[in-house]
Length: 252
Ligand code: PXP
Image 1 (spheres, rainbow, N blue to C red):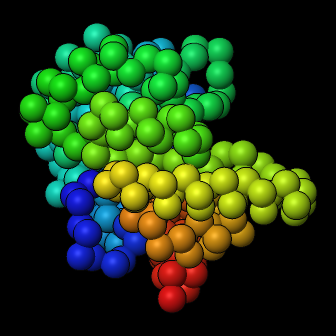
Image 2: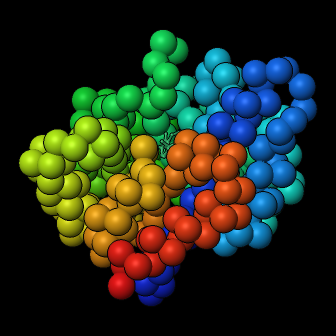
């Protein structure tokens, strides 16, 4: 999403992938992720995130076309760094492209992108995307080597992987969780020092969002699975409003 250095408000990107997961379970047209995106927009989301996976297990190509047409919010298009995905991104020119690692057998994005060991290829990969006006973000672990590599290849944004923190939080492993939080914080500070905008996401829920939202270096959170699950019980607008309130409370 836009670099809003003057805007202190933490942005919320709503990931609608799992509306498509539910749709695909029956193979029809409902529930429609585009409808969810429009509802999220009305409920105060600042952006919509969708991950077109190589195996199309949730979001499909036509969802991306329909999202590009239907939503006014910026689309954060998550994808693997493959030639096929690059072609799709260049065709649609979404506001942001977030590069994520992808393995077919994984249930969700398990680790961060290896930037340090693949920086020449990634530099070449992101150049045409940046030229097309897409704001490129790299989904990485909060490791110094990865953050420095992201800066070297000129990525304007990194998204720090909060999955381990969330798992430790859910397991009640307080010391390990706090160590992971410190790692995320140190990473966020380093990225800002290197001039990179910092986003964060993966696994966040009402209980875990506070300490991440409280980090002033973090400009945007991308949250999906929990919000879509919660919406079954309270509705998507109420789930988003509650997340927004918790983010704002942590920020203040
Ligand atoms: N950010 C990135 C880069 C992701 O790959 C995902 C999962 O698709 C998320 C955020 C959202 O994670 P979750 O669905 O666990 O909230």
